Structure formats: structure tokens, C-alpha cells
Length: 67
Ligand SMILES: [Zn+2]
Image (tube, rainbow, N blue to C red; front, side, top):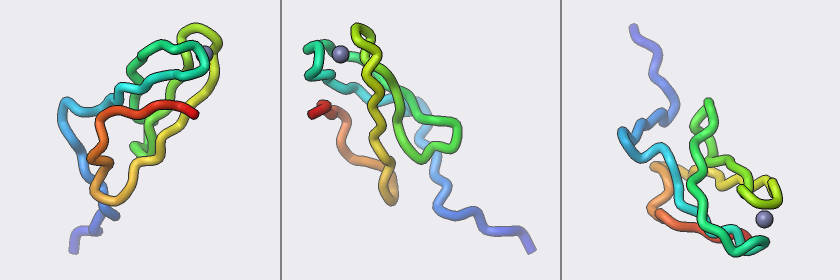
């Protein structure tokens, strides 16, 4: 019997997320981490770290902004 992977869904070609960094008012793409549990990235200007968890079935939102 093959082991059933836990909700491991791959969205081909959609491995990044557009995010607006309000800290510096810049737009940047952030990418999935290696475990595909969240999108992670840093502000290109100040280096502020951002993490957007990926929910069940993946996030339907394409664009986020930091607070
Ligand atoms: Zn910033």
C-alpha cells in the first residue's frame, strides 16, 4: 500500500505570491519555502521578513500586503 501524502498539493507555475510591503511601499514577489507551508520573503529595501502561511487547499488570494 502506498503511503498517502498529507494534503500535498502542487500548483505548477504558481509558486510565488505578490506582496506589497507597506514598510517601504514596494511590491515584491515572495516564494514558497521548501516545505510549501508558507510564502516567505524579505522586503527588498529594509529586509523586513514576511511570511504568509498557506492554508488548506492553498490560498486563493494572489496579493497580500504587510501590516
Ligand atoms: Zn521595508
